[in-house]
Image (tube, rainbow, N blue to C red; front, side, top):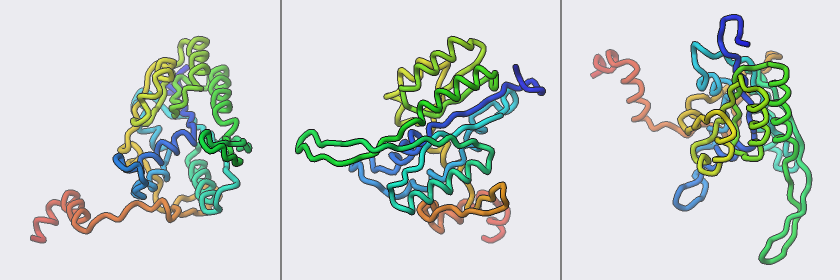
Length: 248
């Protein structure tokens, strides 16, 4: 059932940590695999804006967005604060945050046998699968875009695809993870390749106003890299060619 304006109702479901780590990996130098600290700003990603950019402008209408993640309470306070601010920014756009948990899990080095206590995210992939099935059952969408490269979600996508044949399911996968997601792509009707340009063009601004009227600022770690003066001058010349000509 389409909307009253005959557009397809589209929802997005985002595997938060899966997408975060894909963006985090963009910061690694291809040769040395060491961080360049030049891509952290892409984590200040406006998922609602990105989702709107992926749907057809005249045939589709974005009607809902769901972000699945969990707060890592044992990491440093700054990282915790950035995550909470990011979730608040997402909520300001109309996204719904569905939060799972982390549980301790013993780890051991296979070579030296040294052991330590690690943490493992729980519930997020299950929550995403449950929401997908429930929203399909409630006929809440005509199309769903699932942001993930996690092949564990393939069975849920196949089930919805089989049980609700009139609904369209797309998986949105970061470009660098496409080669490891063949089973996921096969489970859906199609895939969307997410590129760095998609992220760069859909960032939150410096300040975000919440529904309460409160304002949050972009975390310092997520500040975009400084643009050289020559590049700024070139951008200005392109934007105002007549003014640039007069100045010369």
